[in-house]
Image 1 (tube, helix red, strand yellow):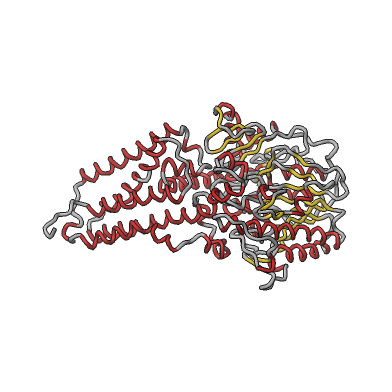
Image 2 (cartoon, one colour; image 1 turned 135 degrees about the vertical axis):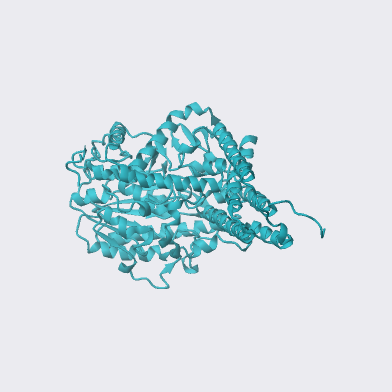
Amino acid sequence: MKDFKWPKHSILAIAVIATWIKTVIVYETSFDMKIENAMQLLILIINPLSFLLFFYGLALFLKSPKARNRFIVGGSILLAFVLYGNVAFYRFYNDFVTLPVLFQTSNFGELGTSAAAIINWTDILYFVDVAIILIALKLMPKSVEFTPIRKDARKAYFVMTAAVLFLNLGLAETERPQLLTRAFDRELLVKNIGTYNYHLYDVYVQSKSSAQRALADGSELVEVSNYVRANQAEPNIQMFGKYEGRNVIAISLESLQSFVINNEMNGEVITPFLNSLTQDKDTYYFNDFYHQTGLGKTSDSEFIFENSLYGLGRGAVFFTHGENTYNSFAERLGENGYFTNVMHANNKSFWNRDMIYKSFNLNEFYDIESYEVTEETSVNWGLKDIPFFEQSAALMKEMPQPFYSRLITLTNHYPFYLDPEDVMIPEYDSNSGTLNRYFQTVRYLDESVKEFFDDLKEQGLYEDSIIVMYGDHYGISENHNKAMAKYLNKEEITPYDSALLQAVPLYIHIPGDNEGQVMDNVSGQLDIRPTLLHLLGIETSKDMQLGADLFSEEHEDFVIFRDGRFITDKVVYAGEVCYDRATGESIEIDACQPYIDRATQELEYSDQIINGDLLRFYDSETGNLLTDQNYK
């Protein structure tokens, strides 16, 4: 062994192989990526290789053995952090991190218990390849760590690297045609081109979207406007303007999914008050309604509510395009004499709210400084919902009427912890502590809404208001599918089931209406804006919005998710598979294809509006494109 000669560039080979094997193992153990055939498995195995060969191969350009080794060790540490960052992000969001998300640093300090809940001591294993490389350096005689490499040999190395890349892309394109046009489906990209190449592609897409605003001249709006006009739904004549002049109180119900409504957990009623509202004579309850958020989570739901546009597929619009021109719900109400505001007992800069609310033309933001917060009245992310609602109702009493207030709740937030005195039902008994606690915080949220209704009556605001309540996004991610399968008494949660579990409740409660009912039309968050404006008698035919009035006879049973999935009254499209809505059985893709094309087109149109800041070229009063002569 003493005279053993290590092959040339052994450290380079060890680094590539160690990181390659580790990455493939992480794919299998840390990400829930469905592999349907041998070709997909082969692509998943080889897709990290081209990047690793290229990245570590850059060491061949360094002349000093010490510099080469330092580059390889430093590079392995960097790649380990990149991979682990995706793992940690995936545990919380069930998605892969994007470049815009990395710049949301102002949110990091607020994560607290959420971050602690997703980090484990065993995570040190994600750096095992770094340890292997360091051990190899110790064991190898310095004289043979590296030898000079000829230019032709180096050229051959990178030709081989390119060949591996083209093999990967060729197989991926065969398995999934037009792969790189589906930037909104990050799991599909990672599964086919790998985590590291995905991040390079992400940089390219981000650069492209950044250039869109600089190059936009407004002409792009012609095609978008034609699409919007062609898909408008005429208002319901009986409902249009029926509640003109009423206050609008909109409540974002944090992480509330529909599977808890009218349901029990081990004999315990989960949402007694919200259950009662589904049968209330003054409530329109939408039981087939879905969130349409992406990585922006709560901020996405806010953006959708205000603008009836999709959030971006790669980050939060609140951060990336906070200074764009918008024609928000708040702005439309402001034009009609409303005092507009948002109420949220959190720091004003979280999700960049203090900046984008100016772009929404909101009159006031009641942030944490507007509330009395003590150690006893706060938990997790801030003020508990019951005192939040109580203090908010008191603030509303002092507002000029009519007003529009949008309230953002906090207590039912991951990781779903409550103080003992606020627990009203026991935990569930699955293998997921997250799901087990979720039922308890949902029960607390339900109680807080009940008390808020009483607060509004006490303040004399109830009768003159429309109260809108909606789930902002999912609470239980696909990482907890095993526990969800137990609760729903299913063998497993399929992509079909996961799509349907994105249902969130929507309540439109109108005191004195006496005509409330359960509405079963397939719908989503984009539909809220036009629906409410029409109830208040505000015309939207010239608005650049993608949603449709829920009370219109022309409303279509079709809801698109930010990641390209969709649901109609007949089919569900998820995981690249078309399912029969009624049976959950997979069917021929032809049944979904027209909707697939439309979903892709609609998401692209929304992205164009945001990335190009196209509404700066649009006159919302006339519906005309602003020309170079009158645009400033």
